[in-house]
Length: 78
Image 1 (tube, helix red, strand yellow):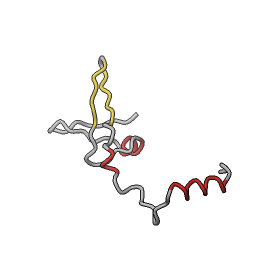
Image 2: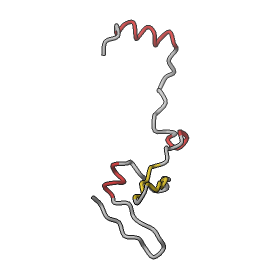
Image 3: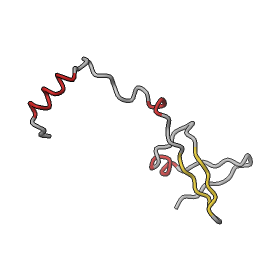
Image 4: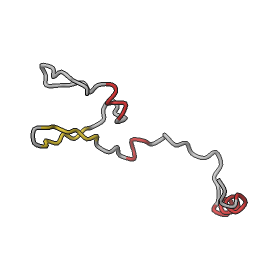
């Protein structure tokens, strides 16, 4: 259980372990949901454009024929 203190401006700091667990970063958005006497927060799913550049482009374009040839050569083995 983690505890946060509300500032004079109504702000709280989400504890580091919770931010890490939910992969929250500066600027991320959170939905607050009131459920009876509890408040739940759910991270807003990131837009695909926000993760642009995480996966690098292949060094050399590969044709479908080359992909099929490689798959056939590997015989479906991992």
